[in-house]
Amino acid sequence: MSDTICAIATARGVGAISIIRVSGPEAIATVAKIFDGKDLTKVKSHTIHYGHIISQNEIIDEVLVSIMKAPKTYTTEDVVEINTHGGIAPTKKVLEILLENGLRLAEPGEFTKRAFLNGRLDLTEAEAVEELINSETDLERKLALNTINGKISKKIKKVRDIIIDLIANIEVNIDFPEYEDALQITLDNLPPKLTEIKKELESLLEESKVGTLISQGIKVAIVGKPNVGKSSLLNTLLKENKAIVTDIAGTTRDIVEGEIELKGIRLKFIDTAGIRNTTDVVEKIGVDKSLTMIDEADLVIHVLNNNEEYTEEDAQINAKLQNKVHITYVNKNDLPAKLKIENSHVIYGNTLTLEGIEPLKNKIIELFDLDKINTSNIEVISSIRVINLIKEALNSINNALNNIAQNIPVDMLAIDIKHAWDLLGEITGETYQDELLDTLFSKFCLGK
Image 1: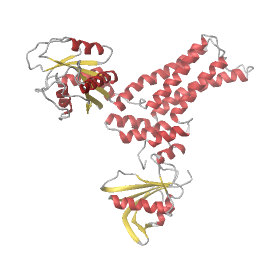
Image 2 (image 1 turned 120 degrees about the vertical axis):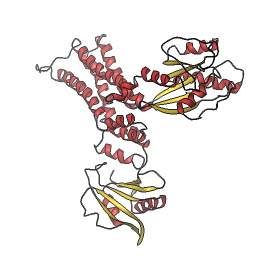
Image 3 (image 1 turned 90 degrees about the vertical axis):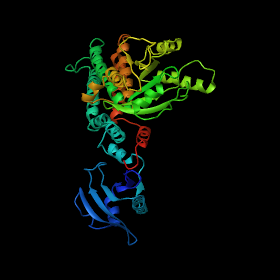
Image 4 (image 1 turned 90 degrees about the horizontal axis):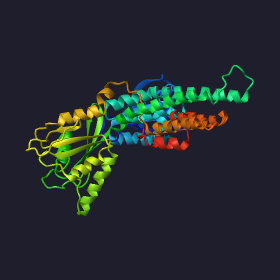
């Protein structure tokens, strides 16, 4: 990281301003060479200066230049931000001039990567920067911001501190058996200590369910026989004509998707092909996709036709839903009734008068406790990478507990305990592999 990097930090296109970010030991000196205004090498840190970018005595653009000197910057290096007019041509031209003067084009996420490597952010905080940029709901924003502020890192550090105290005690027992002041860790008193660690990890995983719900949303599959009103229901929920609606059974032959926000959570609706026995090759592919969507969905809305009697096909679909979170929506209740179902997860309505739409949304809120999530203090984990590492750490602690029953010596049990500690260190980046950083930061946008 001895070189100096630059990149356009704003989205490509036409706007009021564009920002070109520069970071590294030569940031200030390089920009000073192409800036017609105050001597940037002599100005105070965290100041903004008016002037022009020039190249070969030609004015390229009128700009404002922000100077931020190390270490109180995003990367902890000298950072300069050039505010140009927001057209594509001036932004691109200023970037070209910087590259001609010896700077290197930054890789995706390289500014944040430098912030991590220089110790300003840990790995969970760095990941949350990208999550904040990509957040689509207010809850996603709050979740990412809490992680950036180190609230998740503190929870991980708390568990690591408990583990390292235990490891240190075991090592003292092994290396200095004559030291009588240290607690003797035995197969009798080790289980309660490991159980404490286990409960902490299980608590983090339980909390992460809320984080996953916020960050990933709820995948909702709308299923049922052909021509029961699945596409009409999708269009009504989305308030747009997303899916084609006709009276011809089997119109929908592939999945149609759309999103809405409910209580700050994204609902990802999937309208599926009507499920029935068919000899039509194309329709059968759609039916197979519908059955797959049932398995993959977080919630299934089974649509029935109020004007039709309950059929064997309806029963087969319902049987597949018994181990799924599901709602039965009886559509077309404005027509003469031939169907009567009574249970706590049945909603009657229709897409013409919109009867039943609000009760349907309220049932989703109830099933997923969305009111509770919306008002809770969302200091929870949402990163799949972090969740998987916690699961691995929990497995190591469980292995240690299981091995106690086999009378495995304490010094051998310490291997599993130490492995759990190392895994939690990967979460915050106290231990990491270069390949992990390359993969993680490659997902970032340019200029961040």
